[in-house]
Length: 440
Image (cartoon, rainbow, N blue to C red; front, side, top):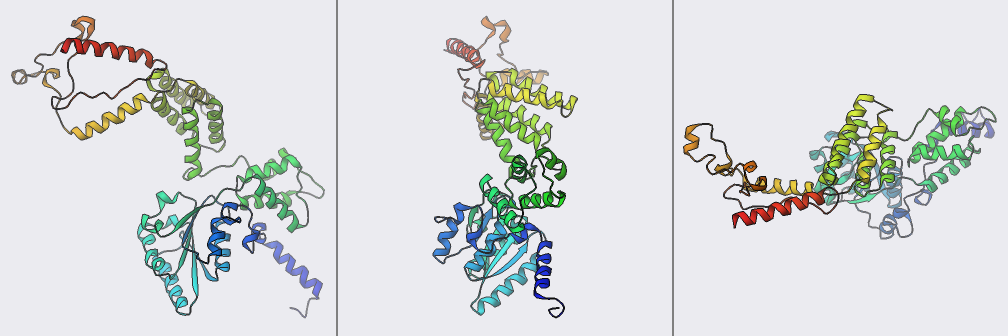
């Protein structure tokens, strides 16, 4: 081939081959100093910086969203620590593949060579497969670096976690994504065909994912005609993209619903509306949001405002009736109502306490005086004997005991001095006084 092409032609051909690779692959860092983002791990005082300085790289689990550099950093760690780099994916690998990798690592170790095994999507391995790593981690055959987008506390064996340090990778922020765009423009030797507002749209659509950002940039370059410049509206039309959509089975879903719930509990209607809008925008099932609002009405408001549950349930039904987008406003109305309602977890706490005592007490029968006696035998056994019909008593209150005979009286429900529960508290205090007076 070298006989057929001059130096310039060969260089042009090589550049063409390089341009055929995805931009994200071409911009992959070749040293740890080139990595953008993750300064808490790779900065001067970063965890990985300290590990490499001490030459004591141990097994690790990288936990974080896609496009944050987990694979790249694992490969660069292997280079920096003079390890042979081996990569597998839990999606495509099974026990037989693991055995081959472990055997190759053992042979390598006999020659004095170290192996860093990078396992992508490690949470996809089942419990038994995860256990197979333990012996080779313990005897130093491999240094394991697992990558996961899922919470390791829930998805990985405790035994594996006890032998590896979990490092959290952060989604790229605005600054690091801007830096990546500048590097892309330098690599391409041309500016992005977008105005300043459209540039911010690309950063927003990337949603913290560096790989997605570079893919979006490539799409913009491909779509642009000569001397064409996209504004924000034109760019979104060309890219055919909408707001970032999180994976409903992953942490983004749970993080946002947690944020929504806590904003409602914290009586911040503006923040609550923001997170509700985020979840609508991300394609969340509105009926799921309706169910969560109903739960919040009982858990965080309860009897401080009994209408909260009515309104939350009505909003869910309204969405079910109207559909999207008209029904979304009903859920927003319920969200604001809950956030601005008086708060009380007295009912929630009372129910948990009652459940605990019920489990501990087991199958204790109710006292016989409050049981019906539909047969003569049951009446002879004392069922219903001594029951006082409350409506026939002064103040429509008898003050009888209703707990099982072998279980002392418990107080589970302690209403707060907010909202409607102020009135409930006064009633309970009045009835407790009558109970003491009538029972001595």
